[in-house]
Image 1: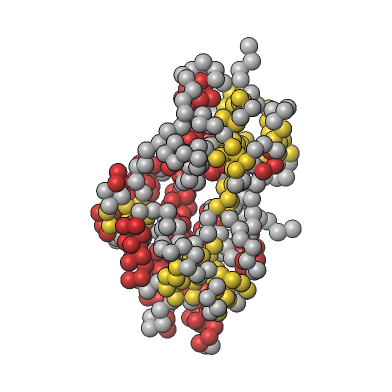
Image 2: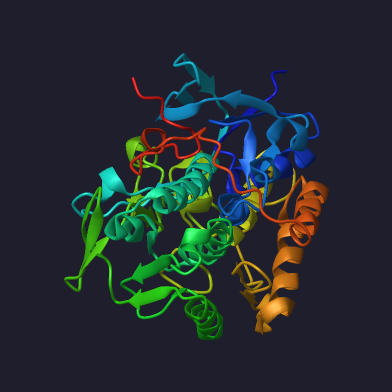
Length: 434
């Protein structure tokens, strides 16, 4: 008798944990296939530390074949799904074409950079969704500092040492917090710049930083950023962008060579191509994470509009916590369709949030207990070590070395600007210009 094939599209937080749970439940009774553009699971919360020169990028990349024994990995990017023929079409890293037949499908395609119709942003800004973008940002910040040190024109020096971050959510706040410390360390190595501090700007149309979190966490992050000299501007965004600067919505012009786009995410464009019902770009599913009318298709994570039982009529937010738990529940419900366990609706309880602000600073509220400073830092790092599905000892070792050794501040030049465009459906893969 042929074993059923379960195909999981995407190996982010939702897809990875769906595959891991299914491998445990199936026990060899099903063929499990993960389709993903890379051979690793990316632990995105630690990317700002990669950009800040604190962590080796391999620390945040967990091998899929090592972490998912019994699961077949197919390297490729899904570009079409035939729901009637039950097949997934994909392109592999060498532009080859392939097709996967499935009996059950778990769609966990994730998300990409959210774009807004602002002139010049797509051409001049860079996002922060993958290792290539983190490596590019680290090199870019170091390069701009070194070029500023070499420049004699005060205007050019100022522009190269001005960094504009758009979006004051998790990513924007952490990128800014780590970026300030990175440029401070760079200044100490360039005597000409010691009395000319860099300028970091954090913009958002919201009324406060971290608008999606508790106000106590927001106040802590805001206080730390301002204390470090960050120009925090709420209710303000970018009106236009050029290679040499940006115009803000308040009419001010800011000369800069660095526009970092952390506005948010949107579901992977694959979702819209399915021809199934969507809600704000996310695939509509029921409380069992099943696509109505297609009992063989489940969806979870950022790609799915999962009903939020705590907020009737709304979908769960696009966060890692939800993606992890939805991936596990989708896996259990897929197994239930084969007689292992029973179908259960998605339920969740908030575990709290943690925001790493670099150095000894953080803001966290584990289980509702508000923390700041070193105590929050300990809680934040403990949470990340527990959540990392691999590389824990190496990550902890890097943190320990960072406490006693200076940062390694060199640009490797491995990722250049054209290879990490803002407008891409695969931020984890550098674009090779033709």
